[in-house]
Image (cartoon, rainbow, N blue to C red; front, side, top):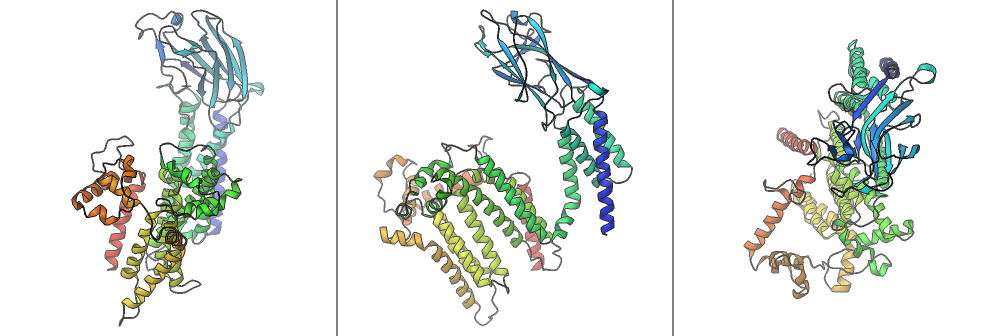
Length: 602
């Protein structure tokens, strides 16, 4: 078996070398891109004004005289994006620095934002300028020419414009030594594509497919495509991703099943890499989003200066999140904003690990007959969907209590399910139950809705947990439910004690008043001080139960959708944004498969 894998690996590496050699060979063909600016140029230009055409003009524009009938005005900075066709290359720009009055503009051309190529003052007439590209070989994709120009306001429409660009000619021919230097990124892409192709396709057919990829690379990327002159700039990456997807679908399930415990190690490394990426992205988050989920952060930040402020009863904000900020602030030189960014990212990583664990626990026991490791594959898919979900990534970047609360809640559910499977080992089912209660109590410390985990967990233990005592089947269930509740109270005790000592109410909050204003106050929170603070939940429900149920139903419709929402963000049901494609359909299939599994077991 080992010799077979060695043979496959050696053949694949040789085929990868063949793919790289093919790309290098195809790079030796001279190519020319002639770009008619203003007509079929969208694949090459960025940051320009809309095309100016003589045929479309309501009156004749004198600055277009001498062009081929179409051109584009540049802005202060505009870009010409070209494929990596090889080095050395030359680019000829036909342009005009027209001004109704005054001095013609200066133009500076920069390669890839780093290498100045030319600086000159235009004459006001049509002129051609050629620049040589002999650098930028290390760039992973595209050849970008930046056009920096002085601007003026057009007399007819008031747009700020730079120079008028009519045509761009991009030529790649043999340089010294009679050969064209290929771009390393494209050679590497060809090698990876060939490697994957060798693993996907067997036999002589792989050579035909490799030749086809090479021809598409030449006529779709390096050379100007013959039918529509727009290069496929992401051609090789798309080929690599497509082959990788085919390979994953074909061999991924088997590899995941065979990985065994090593899969958990890979999952840990993946989550660490995800955390590193999120922390890098968080560097660009330097201000609060207004309006948005971060509107409450100012309240949290003001409670982190001292422990006395942390342990303060608040009718809306529990002490858990301010306490976390207070603990992390020394790491960030006392900056609560930076501490919150770090907490959000770490909480997102905890959510991913808890979600992966929860997915494995929801599926049948891996020791059950016929399991064959499918629980690992499904859990891995769940992890990938969570990690790539825009909703999860977004809240891992937002600062606030949302992500810590979600992480603690998910961890509590996972621990509760783990307690149902524990029979022996270092930690018994009782230990897992207590830990589940502690995690639920931590969720309550962060946000009020964490209280819902207490009755849910107790109900789960009473209804699901089995008992070996057939004479008194409910006695051990009640005891285990009490252990879960004890763990919850233990973790939630700081908040409960603060509430009792400072207000006399263990569950001190104004949420019922908040709901009253939504149901009976016309959603007018400007009347906050006109409404008493001691409104209870019964004061919200009993005055008009029908109105309360209608209000609750409207909120549920806003969450799950009614089928009549528009396509704007504000009109889209919130629930529709929780799962992205194809996770939404995989979730439906998962529920169906789970139902079938339960029916089979029953």
